[in-house]
Image (tube, rainbow, N blue to C red; front, side):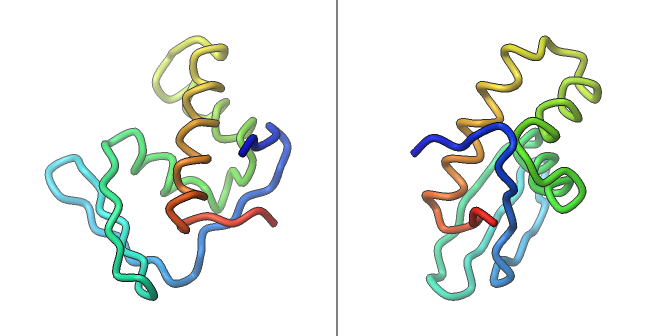
Amino acid sequence: MTILADQTLLRRENIETAELDGEWLLLNIDTHAITKVNELGGFIWSILPEYPTVAELAEKVRTEYDVEMEVVLDDVQAFVEMLIEAGLLINA
């Protein structure tokens, strides 16, 4: 599955989150599946409502972590695709 940079994404409503020692746990209430993500993944998850496209997320990560856009865009896209496959995000 390929997500376009300008495609709008939404977090599913049935997801509970917890931050523990720099890692985030994302719990799908319906399936009881837990997805563990690192600090950067948690940052992306937390800003997704304000920056709902891959391009916006990548730009925010680039400025926050001072990294090159080419690297960030690929990483954010791969992370978002993983969240969709895990049932945590949907395409709007």
